[in-house]
Structures are given as structure tokens and as C-alpha cells.
Length: 125
Ligand SMILES: [Zn+2]
Ligand SMILES: [Zn+2]
Image 1: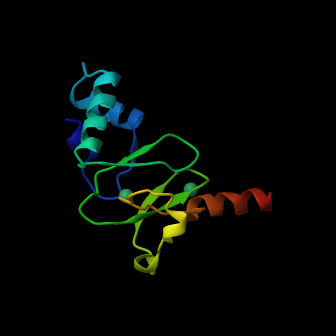
Image 2: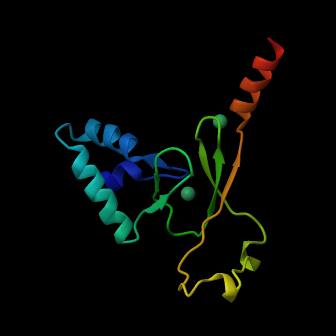
């Protein structure tokens, strides 16, 4: 159910958004169930959890292809991106603090075209 709601490309819903979509399919579903299911899906590796810095965590069903993210600081839009040069991104051993690295995830932050246009309109008025 929750997995169905998350299907698709460039889908990065918050838990609240998953909840409201799941409710349309199954009105009696509870927010706790949605949270529990999301946590299970993350534990099983079926869904990625992304923190964008500010704002709530997003849940991303795109686990088949390694990717990074482009985040709009204006409206919170999140796109999947495949930046160049990440294969050469290395954390020197001296910086690993004894950690066994399992993953890296890069978030590019900026303003999407809509938010840029909105800023321009404000500047012009
Ligand atoms: Zn935006
Ligand atoms: Zn993604």
C-alpha cells in the first residue's frame, strides 16, 4: 500500500504526503502505520530516506540506480540527478574516523525555475 503510493520517478514524498495519498486508497490507514511501514521499507533497502537539511525527511523509491539530489531551497522540489565526478569523490582514511562507509549522498541546493521567476517578479514590483 505505502509502497504503491511511492512508485514512480522523481518521487520524494514526505511521510505526511505519503499518508494523505495512502488515505485516498485506504481511508482507515493511520499515520503510525505509514511511519512504521516507511521505516520497514527503509530497513529493507526498498526505499531511501533523504534529509534535505531543512524541512522533513523525504522518501525515495529509486534504489535501483545510485543517484544524488537537486533541491530547491524555495519550494522544496527535489529531483534525481547524476552529477559527474562523484566516482572520484574520496573520503581520506584520516577523515573516516574509523567508520565503515556504506553510502554517500550529495544534495545540490538551488532555486528551481519557478522560484527564480517568482523572485524576479518580486524584484520588479
Ligand atoms: Zn522551487
Ligand atoms: Zn531520488
